[in-house]
Length: 112
Image 1 (tube, one colour):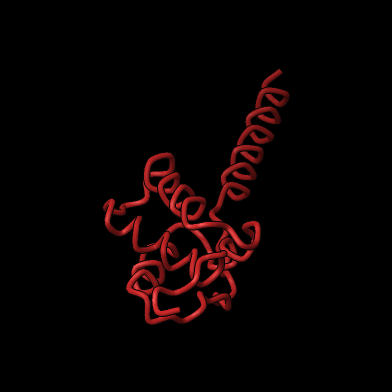
Image 2 (tube, one colour):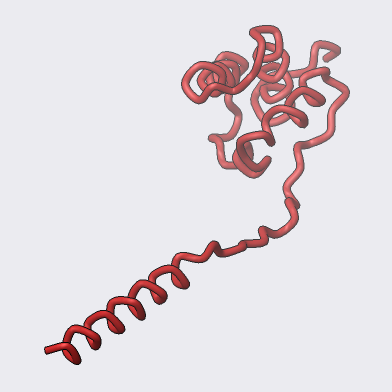
């Protein structure tokens, strides 16, 4: 009986060690970001470059439907602000929306 108890203790200890070893953290190295926003002199470009990459890749913008309007782009950025907690002021939302609508959407720059 003592030997059976000892075998069960050893088996339990080995199982515990195996579980601890298998729970060791894994390190993952992500590749360098290659996607970039299209450069612009619009003030929203700088804000978008600084703020949007906090949460997602610039590729996310390219995945949006083409030729979105200013209203649509501003709604998207507002959604990021309110639904996802993006740390943006209302003025930053406006500036980013304008930059995206002009650079990726259907809006024309003010000078045209």
